Length: 633
Ligand code: GAL
Image (cartoon, rainbow, N blue to C red; front, side, top):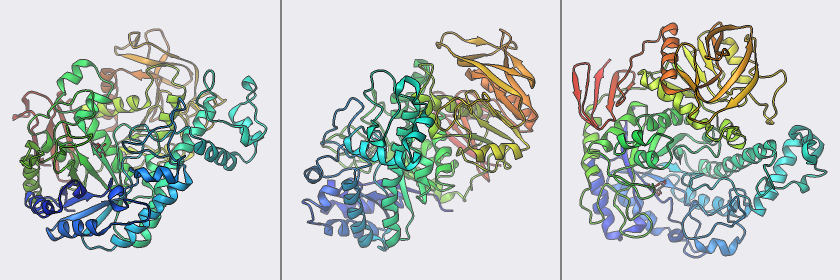
């Protein structure tokens, strides 16, 4: 497969006279793709029903004539102002009951029928007009579902849709009462019409109520997206993508992905480090201009799974962004390193965001490949270098991983709904396991929670999965390799009740979690052979083999055959040591990488990336900061 580069471009931001020159420069730079259109609704339809597509025709023609391929976005993330006059109740409402306003983007409620029809209408017009245009090569639906906290809406519209959803799921109020345990605190309902949204209750709402609401909200995103994919497919055979975000778990990306051909994500390594990563101040300081060394890779592997093998970077940070608490300039070389890391993880394309920095509006402080005066910014030359290197590089393929890690969106909802300890974050628990595996130099596959076949792997991890699916439990029973399940896994039913017999209820493992505790971060639970648990631990009664105990005498790690259960949140070094032993038993070679270096093998090459701020010596080579090297395997 040919791996390609691209860029995000907004023809509507620039005079028409500029387009041809921009397109020629993009082509000279070695770009293949140009994504356009995703926020252009007010220029496509300035007043309701008056369609002005001629400028888009010309833009696509100009870009295509220069040899570029267009990714065409549906503009539904930015309904124009007139839309609110037609649908005054289409705005989402936040958890405190305040309606969200016009004047930025993503101002719509996923469940709003009227807005869904408008989205279908504009998508149909675009798909009919450009579905077979030879210059178009792919589609993008909407833009970054869930970004700016836009999935959970507490609007009257959402309430109506939620009641319908509940009626379909539970059939009768009695069944719902039973499933949720509404006898508790006299919460029984006599009809679906009595049920409200779970915000604004006096104290916490029933976690089962919350879980139902979270599932409903996720389903609304899936439905909204599916309306567009079904329309596009009627008129076009070009692949359809959506651009997901980093560390966003408010909807089930696997479920949306089932309707797409390609998963893509928007990689802003420095923004994410500053804005969302849970890490120490020292860590954030050390990687301030490079980004966290595992955060991008984790999402590459996640979206490879969401895209069932096909995935892209739709937006790649090229310089300082504008939206994080602090917005440093990347180290020289990072715009190249990030792209190569994505390719090493199997990306088909990497598109930089954006072509030219805008001198107006919200993102004027956000770098592009060009400055606002059209002079190349530093990432321009780095992109050119990647283009040259790609041209000289044979296809590297994507190597199969021997280690798999399960990621489950519903578990993120479950532990947000009832964390039990303030700092219990599902994302962080999984991410820390991922990081520990990466420190050992391993390739990793991420699996959806309903994976049915584990036979390709020698080690499978499933930390924190609230409810293991029957599919996964079946796969686990068949699997002959090593697995590490837990902590807090299979701890709830799908209706968020505690199962009896008590968890973990794993095939062949005689174990009962008798009690759990959450702990403040400065209260570790020491293990008898060194190392410690943090945040969370479980007290297990078991007849299984005890591999390791806590210093206070409870089983910390137990096993039955290849199946291991971990009874606490292992601190970083403890996790690395544990995984190293498991890999040794599984026959998987590991190496301890220096803190700055990360590795990824493709079918033919080994790639090594220096994320650190200093030069590193590794196997006789000196690797500069932001350095990437590859060698044949
Ligand atoms: C992304 C978004 C882009 C742009 C970019 C800035 O989240 O999709 O439209 O806003 O961030 O970093």
